[in-house]
Length: 120
Image (cartoon, rainbow, N blue to C red; front, side):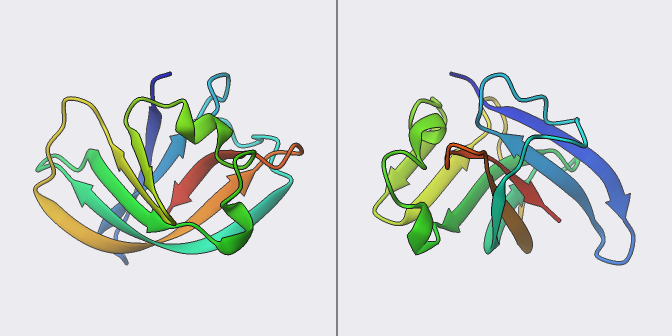
């Protein structure tokens, strides 16, 4: 499976963009309503290109999200590497120029699978 990334509007207060990374194959990352049943606040390391495109994401999984079921969509995504409790996501064809810390929200569907991450 491939990764789907959407870049939102620029936030002048934080001097950065809003991103959504979708792991569920049928999920449109630009939709407002994504069928989220639960979510977890996380800290995210984000690497962006010179033009502000998302290149890499890294974060630690909350303990409740480390099961095989939770990771089902992510483990089938080619550009995601899961090592113990750490997740590394690379966007194919892009190379990061700058790294930032950001707030993220890990979103799960009704079946308890991680469907995406919202990065602000």
